[in-house]
Length: 389
Image (cartoon, rainbow, N blue to C red; front, top):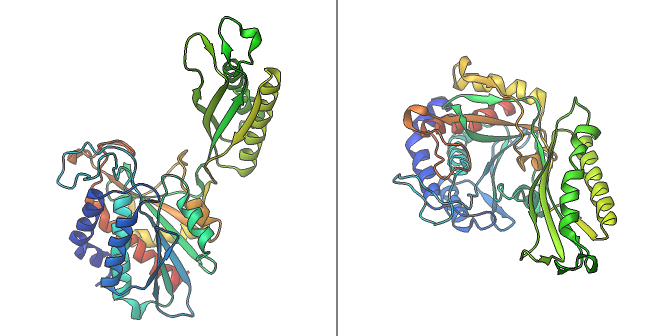
């Protein structure tokens, strides 16, 4: 029996796992019960593993030690969001929801591990199964690697994401920089509060904050080449408590996104320059921090080319689609900085079934018919890359 057929045989197993994870979501870096459930499944299959960090797992399926090594990654955390679907597998944890498909990723990777382990005698290399926490906070991959560099001798790493905007069962690929970097920033302007009737006795950080947001708008249009992509978005300006009080501080938060590291550096340097100059002009004190940072997801072209042969073993050729670059971000980029590889998408949307809501929506769901495609793709890519690349 080939891998595609095995994944179909295990469809109910994969669906049951996905629904169990969906019913019991956990937030980033708090995936303790999720990890215990993955552990139980790995033990029942017979796959050895280790805990990396508090809620990360790296399992090893070891065939021929002299062969290539492939890593397969799934993220396991949920979103802090209510689940408003009326389904039998609705979240049991108020305020938590697998509204991005990570429950499906986890189930697919467990099934792929089962398929690979059952064919371990035919495996001419080693496969790592990486269950990564905290993708939504853009911290989990970095935290795992800080604990241990388990990718040191990996020849290729594959990440897969279910995609609600792509028709169920289709497989999407991209070359090069396929997802943008994402840097969140927090700027604090410290002034001197006072009464609104005596502004001359205060140092007004709110006026400075307004000027900063306005002045920074030229950065993208005048400092970034039209040939490049860059986003500088201010999402929060928070200052003041009453209409007649000048506040003593202001907080500004936003995001920077691009596909190019040099552009990323230019935007950050320009923002810091503008923030300092505005702060000085308005007599405030300025600090800037970047709470979360991740680089662009860059797929290795030769690995993408190779994956197309694997994908076409699993789905019809008209179900293989090249996707445009996304302005979304993924901390899978940290893994790609340590090992070459690629990130693929599997369609999980289905209008006929009412599965139409976007990621991070409280009614987000996936077409579970896509799960065998994902499980098979994980396993088939590992076998093909080890044996044929």
